[in-house]
Amino acid sequence: MLDASTLHRGAKYFMDSGRAATHDEAMALLRSFGLTIHVDASIASSREEQIALLTLVNVARRSFLGGVEVVGLPDAKPLTRLTRARSLSRAVADYEGKVVAKANPAWPAAIIGGRPKPETKLPVWRLKWSGWRGGAVPADVGDTEPNDAAIALAPVLAAACCAAEAFAWHAKDHVMAGHRPLGLSLWNPGADWLVPDGSEPALAWLPSSLWLIGLGNLGQAFAWVLASLPYADPKMVKLLLQDDDRLAKSNDSTSLLSFVRDVGHRKARKLGAWLDARGFDTYLLESRFGKWTTRTMDEPAVALCGVDNPIARAALDCPGFGLVVEAGLGAGPEAFRSLSVHTFPSSRRAEDIWSKDIGAVTANVEDMPAYRAMKKAGADSCGLTQLASRTVGVPFVGLIAGVLVIAELLRRLHGGIALELAAGSASALEAFETVAMQANPYAFGHVPLQPELRDP
Image (cartoon, rainbow, N blue to C red; front, side, top):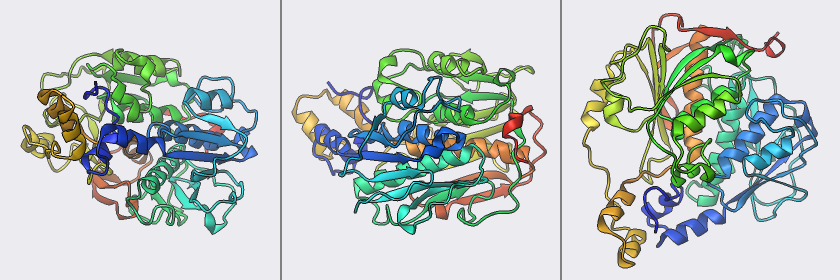
């Protein structure tokens, strides 16, 4: 029996909007979604292209239930900590993609590298990045030049943008999907990401001590982005992971490091094991975060928060962190692509922002056809209400938010602009809005990146 723990959060979009008359119909729609990724031989020696590939496979297969296939993959060894596999093809398989010889003609496509656009009438996106900027552009523009050097967050962002556009095209809910560029500048959010920016600094320092609050969609996005960074010695990076929840089947549809095989395991332990395997120094705190949470002087002074509980968010000022970067996602069928990032300390306290949301009632979608069908089939009314109350969720929105959170740390480490608030939609990143603030220099721990990957 379908319940809140087994519901696919992407299918819920079609249920809550009324486009699917049943849950099975919503799942059938997702099973018609697929994506082919074309890669160039250059991926064998490009760490950035490998990051883009593994990110796109991992994020897309959770919503594109028809499959994610890779064409043109050479025999190559991984150059990124995102996988511990011995070959790139094995890494693709581990993240549930499939290496094939020929593209599926019924699916849109993405290109990583300088490979020419395949012959198809369906949309094709080319992943682009340079410096602190990344995104996806229609391949029709004919640009086959290799990407410029970029920070590791840029190809992650490019993959998330590509997945967002492909989902919108399949869902037929944005007329411009496949016909426009979608991307963002992480150094100067709000600027045109396709225009070179001479103010972008070379990346030299990475954060070394972080407290991750909440290990669901957003928390796992934080971990994925951190693992993409070129740490010289991850053993010097202390990560405190806090979450008291266990993995459910529904997490596989939204969270980058959740898999059906791990259902029932505690999130903190699975995520800790994944980060440990990549050399990070992790500590687990398997309790809820709230006003009662205290921080000792030897624990991380920077918190990355990814919980959707207003009571927990309202308590972010309490433990005495030196810096908090908090991310939040929209909920219903109209707002699930929305995202925001807050930082503290700022002009407002966390309690002032979220205390009004405590006890707020969410929109009731139980009158939609899919829920009426379940009620008619004998679904328990209490369970049906709980099912209806769950939010719509897709992994690429959480990943874009995760990139923005880590980018906030990197900007502050390199003397860039500090943001009090950033907000926008994954469907309209060109309209991203920010509120800048004065902030002291980053003084919460940092380490150098790998010398061979440091920009000249």
